[in-house]
Image (cartoon, helix red, strand yellow):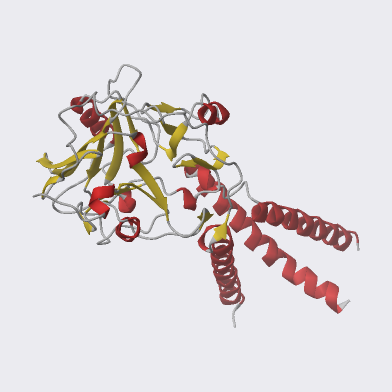
Length: 312
Length: 67
């Protein structure tokens, strides 16, 4: 064998061994399930959870369930899904009124808090018995991030990203990595906290136009918007498909500004971005039918929906 | 002696593989820091192994040069 050929095979073998070593590394780093446990306990729970029934008197029923194909209303929640097709983009806005913040719940893939455990948004929503669900921040793929779910603190090492906290009092705040104080959020009564971002609106509720991130291009997206305690918007954007190109982050931010939100936050998008309604896909995630398997969802599961009560 | 010769032949390949792995982690970390490809226990061990093998390689190279 010629010397040049031998060298070629030697270096090719080295490259193949490198690829193999990287695969083995990935297995142990983030693919194989690894339980993280529950180290930090609960956040500060208020004595009484705020009830917004009188604040939004026409939004809740006296106990009856009133529903259509794209809306649901009872004495606990009021949600309406509206799908828009604009400028080559299909997106759905879920307008959401809650009587109590504890109706907006999150669920994780697997039995306990762990990395490397994932399932589709659809499966997770069915397991949770969700009326409505969207994909979350996919905390399980990362080794660092803030994870506070349903008032329980699972991880408190922030990634170098934006953090969004939904408090028991119904307010939603976004923070940069530098300004976020996890212990203050815990003491302040954080009900949910996500670590992805970026924040889409500034302090005055105006759309941010300049994003220093590699994910600012046209993509499928999921975002949370906050109007006031008890009133929220959750938006799912289809993308990377013939019927919908997806939204850039500036477009996504402008949408939340048009909706009139005070705060808005971008969650995990791309193939992760999925919205379900009554145990079926509602949005059309890119490429994969049910979207990418992820570690968590945000969902609504009103008691009367679970019990099967309805008055169409 | 045989073992030393085998080590001499293997070391450059091991170092090349480890270097390529660490470079891959470095570039992924630039775009996705939150996955902690650099700041984790396994990578720290790989760094230590890389340093150790580099030291052995250097010692062998110096000894060979002086012969």
